[in-house]
Image 1 (cartoon, rainbow, N blue to C red):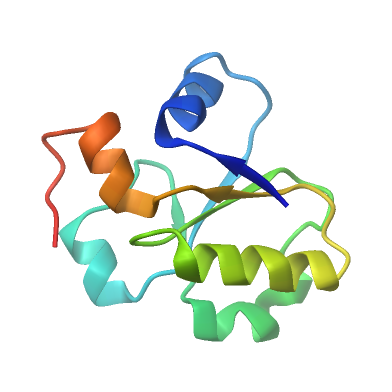
Image 2 (image 1 turned 30 degrees about the vertical axis):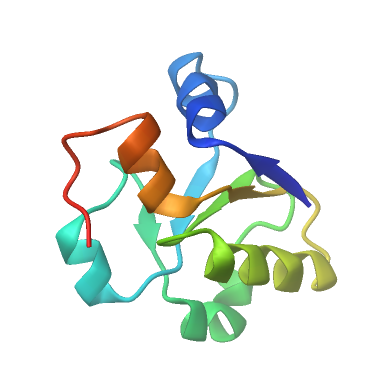
Length: 106
């Protein structure tokens, strides 16, 4: 599984390298506090039932609060045959420190 730091992801998005799916695996109450623009919310508990809606070849960046849940989902997706998953290292907590200091935190 690949990992990206918040700075690497920001650069990746800014440079327009591909069109990754930003998949936020947090709960809805967390997403109401803060989120990365363009991220799709799909709570971790719904991933197994939503597998058929996801493209296993599309570059997919997994996002959560601290990078732990997203890492677990990335590993799960890899075991399901997904070939292009990336975990956002440090999650939104690191993103708010390194990329967007104005982002609300919790």
